[in-house]
Length: 251
Image (cartoon, rainbow, N blue to C red; front, top):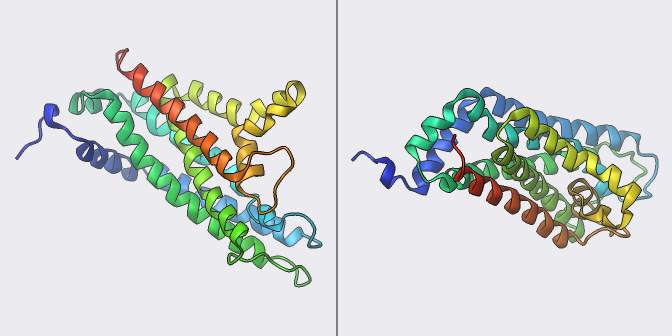
């Protein structure tokens, strides 16, 4: 039986979004580069480590921070690409419920970003610790704080990707949304350090680097679970705003 636009449900919208996401070669190249980049940096950091001082878990997960850029950019383009190509008109014709479109995109892309984030964090950790000198005792995943840092680093990648998707829904133009993403995630912290140092802990980049990907607490940083909560809030606010704005303007 044919599904009409009036009876288009979440599962139909999600299936359509998955087909669109996986059919783009850029999706697979970007996600592969995310894993490869995180792993490469972890290997470089591990090989250059001279002693066992500092948080070796955080060192092994250092590649997660630049990987945020790739995942966030893909999130932005997953939304704005449809506006650039004009495909958004067909999408909204098939699914007139515009918030449903954003929800389906968020669910599909979020699941993909989370899966790749977990793989990137795990592979980076294993590679980074494997390249440590023999004289340096490597952290183990059997240690609760280490396992939590690896898992939450993957979660952080997924949430930053959703944040990028939300910005794309708000701005709709690739260049503007990418500039907003880079500004908020990578540049904003520099200004906050200068003018409001106590607020640095709430910057997305600082949350991932100093709250999620650590096995030892960092002074002045949010706790790991508070950091996850803040990233969830950022993603929810941008996605909610994007869905709301989509109902109040033409495609």
